[in-house]
Image 1 (cartoon, one colour):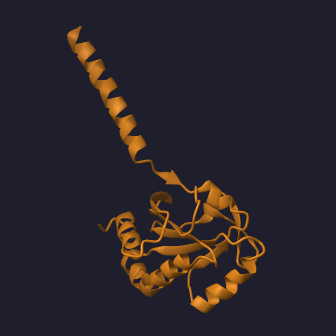
Image 2 (image 1 turned 135 degrees about the vertical axis):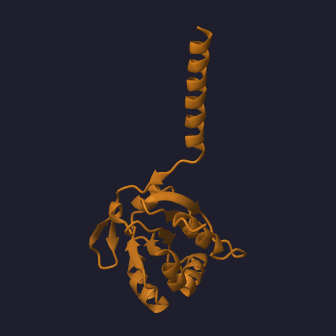
Length: 172
């Protein structure tokens, strides 16, 4: 009888420990929300994929200087990161309908080679709990959010993002 009781206590303890560990490090998939391409076509965020490789999602706005600084820093190293990890960059503009017409000319003038989408109503931003920009997420190859930062860190630059991408790619 003592052995059965001890065995049941061990199972209960393991179950509780596992449940708390899962809560400490939740993995979350990105929500399915319809946003727009820069040409005004609908795009479902559930379709964000990169053949099992990491994805960076950066929320930004045309009026946000730190956002543009971060995106330009990523541009400087993007080819290296792609060669190293196969990462795909996606930028989500939160400019509203009045300002969204400024997005395409700004993207073209900056020479950003990645996909840029419009979240004019901020539905995707709300679903991702984005309150300020820049807000950057890193997804692993399964499309799960594995890292995020809700500001631009001028001291660390984009090194933190790179470290997260390396980890998501299993290279760190």
